[in-house]
Image (cartoon, rainbow, N blue to C red; front, top):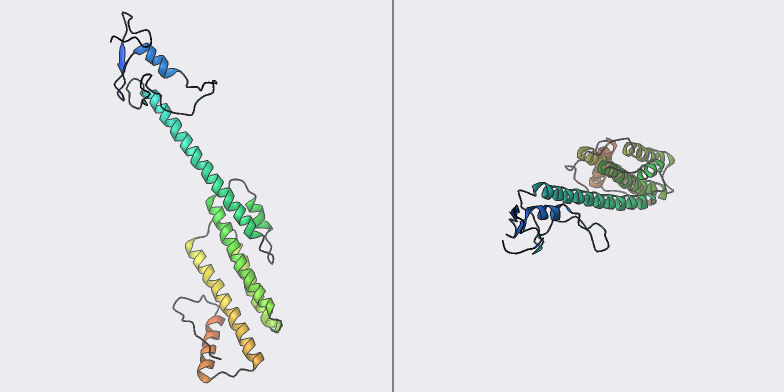
Length: 249
């Protein structure tokens, strides 16, 4: 060693350390102080977490047996910042999703929605809770469309109207049952039941229009209508194996 860098290199008992990342050699005590000092900006503020740099070439010091604990602490700080950033990002996305759900909830006007509104104001909603609310709002929106369809036809007999509205109300209660999450099976069964109810409403409205217009169906069409009526009146979910039939009028 012939270069004086920190000023302690020419002391009789001087010892030296070589940085593995760049190969530069420094007097140990001075280098220890360099590694221990806090990094600050020109105005004295702490800098963003970063690796210590070689005093000469500014190469990051990532590998060193002597300064292993310092490097580990810096790596831990990196990981902490990364996790916080991920949490902040997730929180931001969650806030956007909650805002979107609140906007969609405003479109529900035919059903009570105070319970959902209260839940959307909770802090730190979990993904499962948001998923439940999302499914509930989507289902209520669908059921609201069915209820509007029922009320649209004034000629619909009161008994039939009350029966269809009761079916929609039963589905609404099922949708709003307390649950931790919607399982895939539960969601599929609920969707099938809502689909069956929609088909039932469409069928009743079509049958009413046929009667009002005095349309006489042919024998084959009458059989198909009877088949559809039986399938819908059974109250079971319409499975994928049931084929749709077209009524020719």
